[in-house]
Length: 128
Image (cartoon, rainbow, N blue to C red; front, side, top):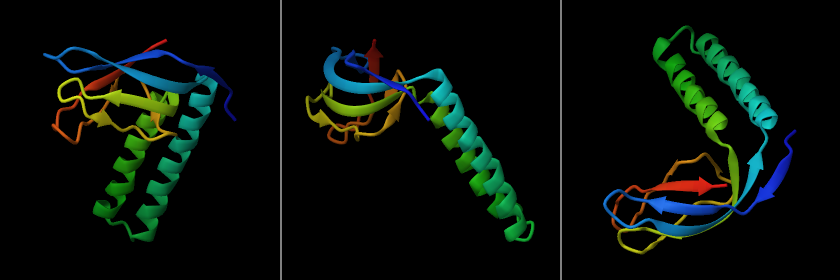
């Protein structure tokens, strides 16, 4: 369904007010066509799940809105995921502790990260 080319871009972890920290990142780039088909599939599942929940819960608007909003977020994140992470090594620009990013994550650039040591939220920028 998707064609990938392997890239080894430079990446920077940016936190305003601190020095940018370099990161080692290995990603696979999704083609625009693959992202489009993946997003259309999520969109179909989103609408189908919302309609099915509407009828299963006997027209309960509260129960219908949950899959609707979750589906909207998943569809949006699917379109933003231009890269699939295969390897990531980076440290927080503020405290120097390692930041984790799961292999297989779909990310865009910039990508929001969280440092669980100092609780700051830097951004990961991929430079192709």
